Length: 106
Image (cartoon, rainbow, N blue to C red; front, side, top):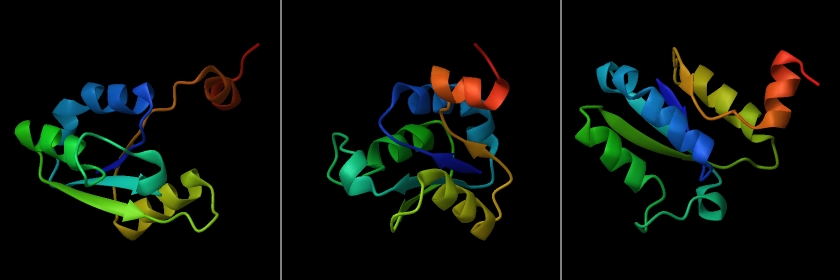
């Protein structure tokens, strides 16, 4: 299982909502794209906070720090999911504009 993480509330909410699935997964890979620029948690290592949180809930976690090399984040995450044979991606995508693009809207 792959978790696409950034600092937005939607990403944190999606992890909390999927916690039962994540805890039961064989392996959880937390993917951070360009983490130095986007993830500045309380620890010095990007992804350490979420890894500790998931580990406390029984998940086997590894953190993957990915460089975008100018590619869109969605492309980088999709390719990483393919490379790692992830069967599911957990990530926040609840912004109104994105929701309207995916599902239609006003």
